[in-house]
Image 1 (cartoon, rainbow, N blue to C red):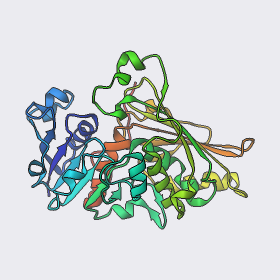
Image 2 (image 1 turned 30 degrees about the horizontal axis):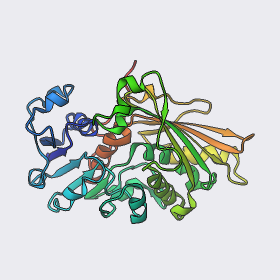
Image 3 (image 1 turned 90 degrees about the vertical axis):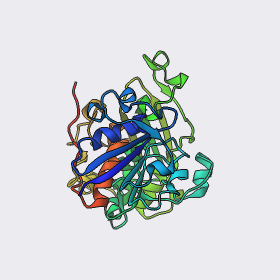
Length: 350
């Protein structure tokens, strides 16, 4: 069976990456691409690297245009997806790459986003440990999927095995992330101009204000079978001059009585059989260069007994495993297709 697909926000970074992956997917036909201000223009004008899709023209993003497809991807700014999802009841599968359907708590939504609150959908991070297994089981047969925030899924994948196994204390998590500007989208912003970011590193959303914090707390709470209020995290992202990539360094106290074997064993047990989340051998740590273009999260783990903390360093491509790759991987699972179809563990180098 070939599934017809519509991709909204197709002129942006996330939409473009979804299209790049789907262009190599044998089970889908990309029938419709949409945009707002760029509607009416050739897709190739905004995504010149997508040569195989040069025949497509950007339509207006309306419920009527998106309707009538088997699968709809929404790659829209936060707060804009809900107005369309309410009108897509007939679509067999809708995947939202924005934040509108990620959070289960309306209070968190009101505090970090604001605007209309929409029902939470199945979270699209298949490998994430949750009570009774992984998030993968919840994605089987899903019809509505919320793709993750790139920073949120990176940190959650980093620490969820330790929370689930009880070998770290989730009430004192500290994470610092080096992130590329593509995570902020394609809209023109002065602080993202090359002259503003080249040669410098700029912290932002400091002091507990970043919108991905409640998403991380929600994911780690699901892993540890506890309330999100029991997850405390200091989260500091730093904008660095690389187009793609996240390097997240996360630490948490070692739980009383946890041995080194217990700690490393928690991550080995969680990810030992996974294709797209890989724990590196002891003493090795990832680089963002190793995951560019890949649907891979690479993790390095260190046990600092002097500080009494576990440190996990994670590298992902924010546009692939952080967003579009996770969305397509979740789509494959929901439809009963091979999970890795159209996805690769191989990066691009140099």
